[in-house]
Length: 270
Image 1 (tube, helix red, strand yellow):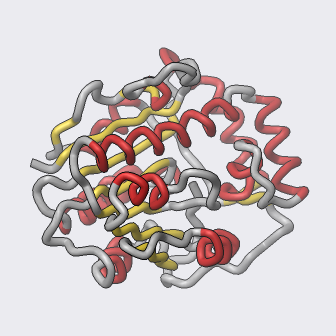
Image 2 (image 1 turned 30 degrees about the vertical axis):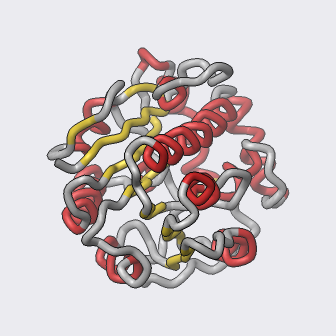
């Protein structure tokens, strides 16, 4: 998932000379929307930490499982997907609208290449609504104000924050963002979150040198957090079973990747 540096609500200028998370992530999952610099950095990181490709795939599969679960089993019809990243197969709106064509989805990103592709590729069905916001995760008030043009905050919303809070380097700032957004949505709304970890019990110690290389050679800078820090993002919410786990293991299906050092969880607002 991508997240840029600007905090004005306007896209960061496209820079193809420096690797960017959205494009490198796209490269890791087999996409074509990336440049040579993204491929070079992606290969180097993968050489240092081979699990990164499994993490990328596991995160994508987690997205599919959670959106389908919320749409099918919990009746959610509104999704706010913050840190969209580059479109690939089975995006949030496609999964949700396949279950319920009337679903309304708002994507949030501020990387110019993401927004260009989103406007071209992320088109919803005629019954529902698919919209895109050019905004930064650091600006929750801007996100909420613009999302309210499409979403009804009087009805439950699934807030998707997959691989995005790891680009908010200050943990208190990250907690504030989550609290601010979840305060605006009503009871019965959900927070869906993934976040990389350095916890050794899920193999996360290998991410530390790889992230150091990333922060020296790519943008935006990234951080891993402990499971204890990550579960704190769900304060005031009720975690659904199986709680905070490796995202590959959340209601895992046959063929899911092995345990990866990327935690995932879903919680409901009481």
